[in-house]
Length: 380
Image (cartoon, rainbow, N blue to C red; front, side, top):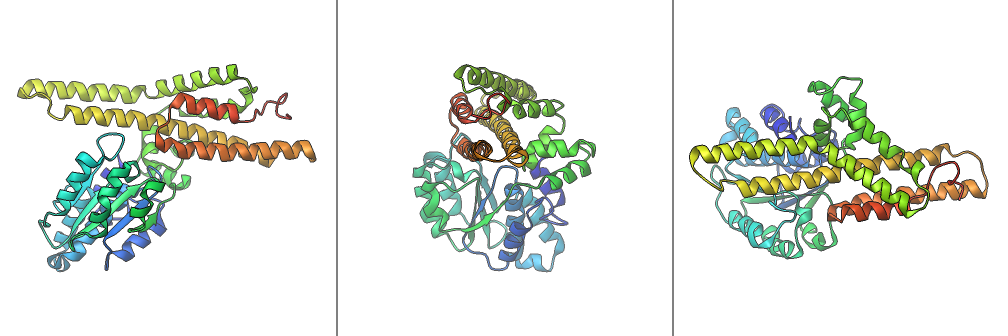
């Protein structure tokens, strides 16, 4: 079950129940329904519930603006259900087809859509997913439409973070922040959905690092514990040499390749199904480029999520080192300072992944910069 599926299933009863572990964000958006402004920016990490919240918010905005829905609960429920499932005619959702939101195709499409009159009522909601990937030209082209929309339009931009080139457009929006979903909440959802046993849920939740979508993917991954152990032991294998780092990077990337095997098989099955449909109906190119672009994006994101999982594990290892560090004096202080610098370096690397750097080079640079924790070397 995906976050979108969960939102659609529960929208008519409680449009916000699919937004897990975000009470402050839900409270802010709920309070905004009665008198919304022209644009909102939902900022938070992947899997934190931004998409589900955007669907719930859109449904509430449209239902609140529809006077007929006020006396017709079924009509209100329909607005909420269709908005949550991205099927409402007055909710337009744009997800970039490639690695970035581009001005030429996608922003032009948004501008045209913003000029169209709502179909079912007086309000229309435009949702822009992955706004953090917008090129500077795309962000500049969207500034005026977002700043001065038609009275019927509400913009909802979704971003993992606000980059310097997006500060101006962000300042025109009401910002709502989303945090990583707490592990306890993720574990509760996984068990309630029957995806994992209660005794395994904490491990999967920890591996998901606050990403509920990833937690659902990992629920059937029997190798997640082994991968966590590999990352946890990385500091013990560092010796300050480039040779050790090169070997570790090769092993880590091979491990990520293996972990992505299930996703690769799923993509192959989807292409086979597409080939069969095209042969049956005699139509070529029907959505192939879109599916292939989606597959590339999913592979890229899977690898990024796996690396973030590893960085989170390494951060926990170095934090444990700080807490459990024995002794006092200059040597102990040096080790503690090195471990704290390592935690900061890991955090910076995790944030930089949004720019999609060269994976191998990023890992090599990181591991060369991390202090070893083996007994014979950690006192350096």
